[in-house]
Image 1 (cartoon, protein in one colour):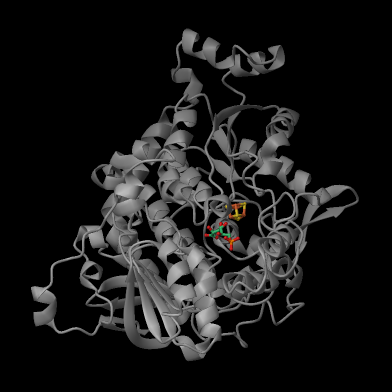
Image 2 (cartoon, rainbow, N blue to C red; image 1 turned 90 degrees about the horizontal axis):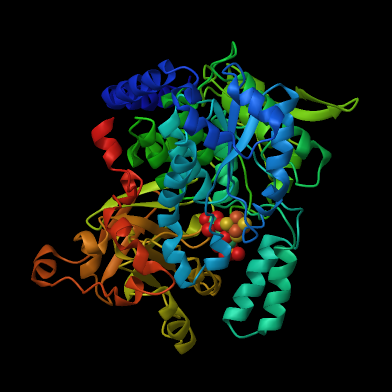
Length: 608
Ligand SMILES: O=C(O)[C@H](O)[C@@H](O)[C@H](O)[C@H](O)COP(=O)(O)O
Ligand code: SF4
């Protein structure tokens, strides 16, 4: 094993020793109950299977047949989740084919961050992760199940499902992906037309035409944003079948993989001989594997919060120093938009997950000795699924990249370190995704332009007052303030200024989209303005220095001046009401800091 990866793993194990052992003893207590529906009364059970077919009722009466809960995030809003509409019946049939039963345990809400990007609804996005976790628990709390299938792909849905699932860590569970849409117009072309629109060079019709050619059908959007980062993380953590992440929805392999996932979870229940509870698949080593894979591919910055929250739900304590130290040791092996021109289909075609896992295993950068839903040992994830004589089988993946501009090898990395860097300084701690930032733009020192809302950028840009070196500071965007929306609407404006040759950067206690990229952005700034963060005292003209090579984030104003300043008011009246935001006030105020995962589940910290 690489010494840094081993050292970080060891310190996470040590730091988590007490919380992890409490979690595992709770898991074992739950497992000791045996077949969970046996704890139900006849009345409970009768309600539980009242609507089932007679053959299903017979199976459920017996305590020797597995019942699998399906938790689905189907809706028509997310192109990625739309294929799930037909999955429950297919999965139920697959379970019956192996003598088990399946029931839909819950439908969970799912927000499409593309639909709400730049809109008031985006202020519910991060909060929806907590709602999804709780909704998953509501479904599984019927205690009718011996395992579960989790149907979710996008941004907050995978972390929400996984956090909820880990409260039932005694059950085996698999994620069931649905795959990316086929490639449309290149993401870079879409971004170019957006910048033209921001400059008034094309009209709305031209912009909508381009957007519709990019997002054109069912399936996950093809950029390497949070959704596809989730898929890569799940697969490297052994939580979905090898090579299942990036098979398109209409590929014949797709349904075979989904049916196989259903059959596999039935095999992994405590009724069989391969009992593999999800709370043991998620352990310190698999969490490190997920972080390393994220870093090696320049994945979404959102996962610097989601992975922390997921790990904590399993009693594992991870922080940004772990990310930062691993990033220094993990080379960048993939260039997928926004970190390059290719999209996720190109990554898959170049060798995809099988080749990535092979490179990382061969380099000692990820742990092989882990439990997975496909069996013990991660080496099996260097294989990929194929239909051979009408049957689903796994064959060795390629050992040589088919496109070294997209997916490269350890001996020829795109960068010697990973795509994410931790920034520290008098403003606090923040993360920056450097994999998408041109080398010449990684050190920025310029005067601040302070705004309270990303929508102010449009007028400022059009007035020409941003046509200079500047650091745009957007404050009052933290979890407790307005739910920490993505500020991706800033990207075309800042990207245009950067293309004009100005040295620009962003500093915010908010966050960006996984699809944001080329402009240096110090995000997730902790402490946020509402929590007394120094960002609340930044004024127009203050000079800020961001150095992504050394990890420095400094407000170059002397202490005395700062001490005499009063913090700017974080005006939240526009975030408190409207679009349902009034329902989320208590949840928003309960969120922890971004570095601790922006979690509402702090109760877990007392439990384990
Ligand atoms: O974190 C992410 O990956 C984003 O939230 C992504 O899910 C969102 O949909 C982007 O906003 C889409 O990109 P555009 O807004 O550029 O289409
Ligand atoms: S990737 Fe983003 S835009 Fe695409 S379906 Fe998922 S949430 Fe929506």
